[in-house]
Amino acid sequence: DHYIICGIGRVGSNVAHELSATGRRCVILDEAMQNIDNYLDKHPEQLFLHGDATDNDLLIAAGIHRAKGVFAVAADDSKNLVISLSAKQLNPTVRVVARCHDVKNVEKTRRAGADEIVSPDFTGGLRLVSAMVRPQVVSFLDEMLKSDDNLRMEEITIPSALSGKPLAVLYHGNKDCVVLAVKHLGHWQFNPPAQHPVQGGDVLMVMTTPQGRSRVEELLAGVSND
Amino acid sequence: DHYIICGIGRVGSNVAHELSATGRRCVILDEAMQNIDNYLDKHPEQLFLHGDATDNDLLIAAGIHRAKGVFAVAADDSKNLVISLSAKQLNPTVRVVARCHDVKNVEKTRRAGADEIVSPDFTGGLRLVSAMVRPQVVSFLDEMLKSDDNLRMEEITIPSALSGKPLAVLYHGNKDCVVLAVKHLGHWQFNPPAQHPVQGGDVLMVMTTPQGRSRVEELLAGVSND
Ligand SMILES: [Ca+2]
Ligand SMILES: [Ca+2]
Image 1 (cartoon, rainbow over the protein chains, first blue to last red):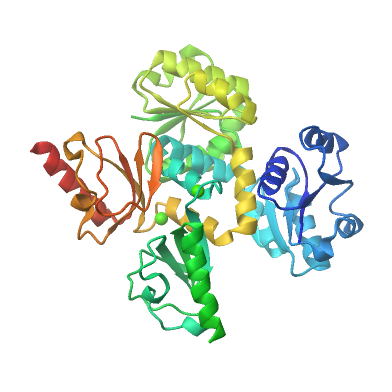
Image 2 (image 1 turned 135 degrees about the horizontal axis):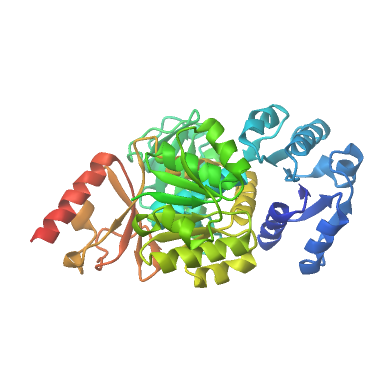
């Protein structure tokens, strides 16, 4: 249940730091010892392997067969595509998130097996524009993504036993849990009314406290046990 | 009321593209004609100036005195700091958003005058981690930032005439407007109750349709006219 980070440049370092800060174990891989050393300077206890992450043997040494996820965040898009392909071949259940510099490589990398693609240059561009024209929205979203405060966005998947029931069943009287949207068959419906019927597999996006979340989880566990 | 983009590399290109796509005028500046040509290939109608954006004369030629905002998105952090400083000296009311590669340059760039700093490598790292451990939240936030659908996040600033009134005054019966949070003196309070008293200058973060937004704006305009 660890994560493998392929490439420990500037983006990879931020990934490793965030995983460590949130109590998740990871191993870092890079063929440039200089990149590894730069990271070790600030995080001397970090597990690492020196070598080429497109090499199956290195991924196996990094524990790909029991890993929870692989970050393909090397500097080169082609390399990230090959890493995605190799990781999925060695362990089809591992989750792969890849970085693309160039948006024209996104589709190809997805076909190679990456579950999610992130393009920091593209996201960064959108974010710069938002910081210019909608600064408060950006500040709000930052707060929502930070995990250091009491209230944040969480996702809840509806068990099939609740199919057809209204949303109110789940969060009626639960003031610590606001349902922002429901995702049904890949489409987000925002601000659903209390009588909205949910279906098994629907995903609720809620804004909640840890207590509010616990109450919903207890409720869901109760339903599944019936 | 135009924007000046200093640096038209990968991030700057995404900024220019997003501004154009949302109907905002901009001029691009770069000292490398190759970067400008790459952008012009896809956007032949784009206004540009070839030269060094740290040079006051070039900023003046780009209309800094009547510009709405400056993006300091050159490849080099020092250059972005100098651009921020120059832009603010030439026009103290212009909004400056700067890019930093290295988070250690953030504070210095802010002191030089940048209103907001974005670090794509840092943001990209956080986003990669979210895509791994909270994929639905990322998909939801993407939807919230996209401007092509009916419902999205908007910010509303409370006029001083409403100080002390409960939130309910603003959105009671307005089903198209959900208040997610209130920012008071720099601090976000999430999920405020209907009786929460607002103060002049508070910012509401709402999820709303264009119609819902119009109703709130009419209400605010009515208050200011009293
Ligand atoms: Ca938060
Ligand atoms: Ca939207």
